[in-house]
Length: 483
Image (cartoon, rainbow, N blue to C red; front, side, top):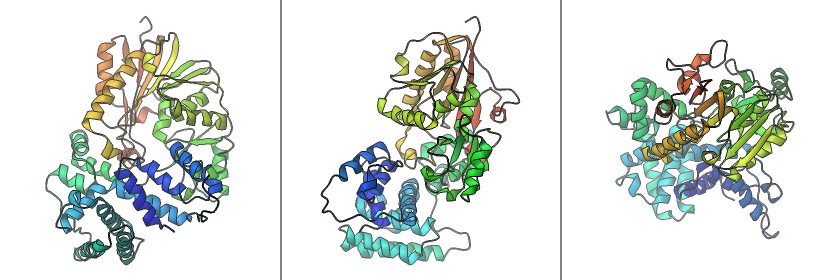
């Protein structure tokens, strides 16, 4: 039966071939689900669930699959996400201790070395001997028996070099320049490090990079149409969880790391809450929709902010939710039923092609590079490039320009991204204001919950290392009444 490390190796192979890390992980998790539950695991992605449903139709003579224990699932998840996230650091260690650099190693050997080094460097709870022995076993099991001795030697060399360092020292050799040093030490591409150095300086960039390498917090947004925050807090405490409040957000609770499976927590099935980071909750409060409004969510999927708008409107009025891909609206439609919301209609259409007039409020939660949520998406730092950012910035401007034609005089529009790239944030807004002089920035005023994050220009920026929230940019735009 495959071990957690063998399953992690299989998932990392898939990532190396181009799969998204979360999908690759879900597929190997599904491969260890008993057939009766594999097709209904609600934690899986659509594609993973489809694969597992197909596999459950195989011959009943197949040997039964024993499910992974919670501890094995946690280790598997940690190994996959951690190895993907830290791959530049791990490759630098391979470069340092092997005669050939990581890029020139056989792909499977490189993955096995990365897995072993990740455990030795970042997982203090795993004995060094276990990390080495299991890496050697992976080599033998996966057609690399002749290189098992090399795996053993390199990993043991890392252990010896680490032990020889003074207290708090590190055997990893780093370049002197800030871009290379931070990029290798914290495992980021140089262009992201350079971008943040220009914005925040060296000390804050290092703090930001370190923050994104932590496991993400899980925040809940309470559905006030079904329950109060106090009631949910009491229900969670009844199962020995101690949630915490998040800033002054009226609907937010943060779960402790020991929360376990989300779907098993009190109130999930009843629609008492949904998962949404505190930063994302601020977006709905900034738009401030009112009961009876006609609201457009121009980029709605997967729908977290859309459902928040309905809650803020007391489910009274019209919310039209657009997305280019019908498949991406499925999650929103599922949550509408669970949260018992009725004001939302979904439309599988590119909102740049939509013609409307007389809308009260518009939310543009724009597609972006996601550089404010790198802790949630292990492989995002390696998938985005300056070229993809330039393409996104053009798309973001086109969305704003089209949405501006929908609103009635004095209509309100909020533009938001979960990135920390000025080309997608400040530059897009400046370009829009230059092209549409009838619009202006309308910053929130006290006692609004978002005023803490207002910058001198009137837009809001949330920096993870300062606020312990996802990185976000958002701005409220107001059309002139006589426009």
